[in-house]
Image 1 (tube, rainbow, N blue to C red):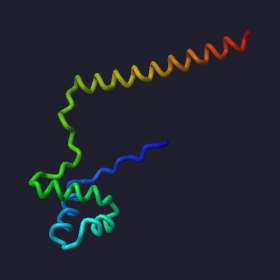
Image 2 (cartoon, one colour; image 1 turned 90 degrees about the vertical axis):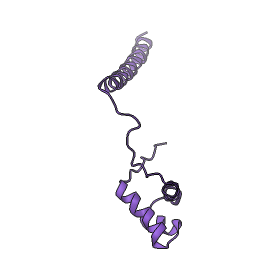
Image 3 (cartoon, one colour; image 1 turned 180 degrees about the horizontal axis):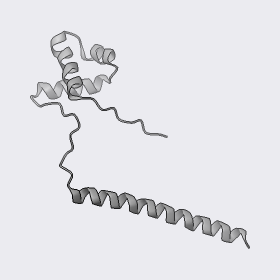
Image 4 (spheres, one colour; image 1 turned 180 degrees about the vertical axis):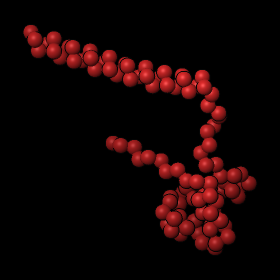
Length: 100
């Protein structure tokens, strides 16, 4: 089963959607349907704004340092090497069994 990619919305889009609900006189469900987004998502944005918090666009939680980027790259490379190693082990076992 494939994962559905997460949709990313701009800050302007979120602000306008919340403004439509709060000032436009339409309900959350109707506005969400017109904008083709989930009503739960829009409701979460409205509640966040009502509590006086800004709607985050998906900014990184913490700044990524050069060291963190290198660690991430090395972890990805290590995972690839492990997959290749495991594949070679299976292929070796298959061909060794077949040659008998």
